[in-house]
Image 1 (cartoon, one colour):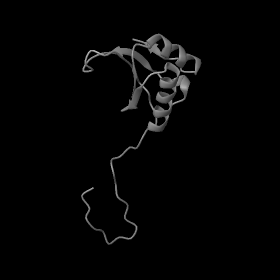
Image 2 (tube, rainbow, N blue to C red; image 1 turned 90 degrees about the vertical axis):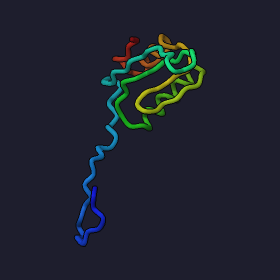
Image 3 (cartoon, one colour; image 1 turned 180 degrees about the vertical axis):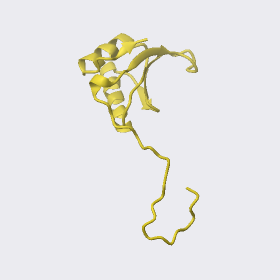
Image 4 (cartoon, rainbow, N blue to C red; image 1 turned 60 degrees about the vertical axis):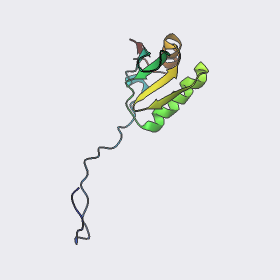
Length: 105
């Protein structure tokens, strides 16, 4: 920003923040489901990436998947982490909910 003070009462700060992207409809979300065990002490997690949208919607989807799988996990930085290997089950759940482009990689 590099502006400390302005005497112009109508001055608007110009920021480079694009903000969060709007959440795409379920049909257009291209979610990728994979198994990950790097940097996790040998434990397996199911990783869902490719979500485009607001953090609130990501949190809501993550919470629903954790409840339906009956395990813990987290949703942050545009990805959902589910503890354990639930690739097939999560793919099935997502397709039933309308995420037609969900695929296991």
